Amino acid sequence: NMIYTEQHTGVARQVAAGLVSHVVIQIGINDFDDREMGLKIYRGELGGPELNTFLDVAAVNIANAAQTVQDAGSVQVMIAATQDYVTIPIVPELYTQYDNPEGRQRLVVAFAALNAKLKAIAELKGIAYFDYNAAMSAAVNARFDGERYLNVGGELIDLRTRGNEPHFGLLDDEYVHPGTVVSGLSANVYIAEFNRVFGTEIALLSDEEILKAAGIR
Image (cartoon, rainbow, N blue to C red):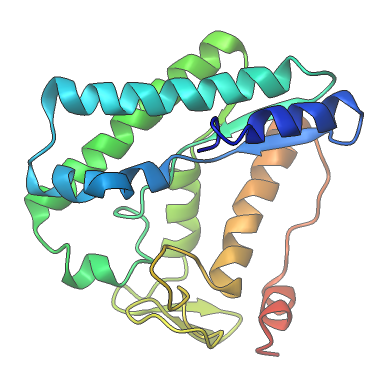
């Protein structure tokens, strides 16, 4: 849909107009939901050449979008890894509905294969690649009690249950949409990578700022 709806050319026009200096592209997770692709991988119903073709199409579309934006003008472009929400422990359903170790591992391998393709293409095109999954996993695990909660500024954020109250990690919808606190942690991993790769000097969000934005403090 990014390609069909011309999101990439829309951003390119903003770059050409001098309105955008930095772009990060992170997309592809919804492809695993389309036609239950992720569920088929989990069950072992999708693999081999068919799975590789599926991953190739996603990688090429993402790379083409990044190239379109980069060619539009003076801009810093980064491709971030497609989210592996099996490895990043923030999705309640992965503790219940998707609890088969072999099936989970098939998903982890598929995400890793897609991101390896993205990294290789990014390096070939001279575009920065960000291993978001490693960075976000580290950020979450540093605060995770290993059972249920994240500790952010002394507040406990529930990862085993969905809810729209700000003490829950994920919103109570049908998608993987983080609440404000987890979004704040995610924002910080992007900020740190931008500062490291592009030399920006953006201040990280403090725990207090994140909790205030969530309406907890």
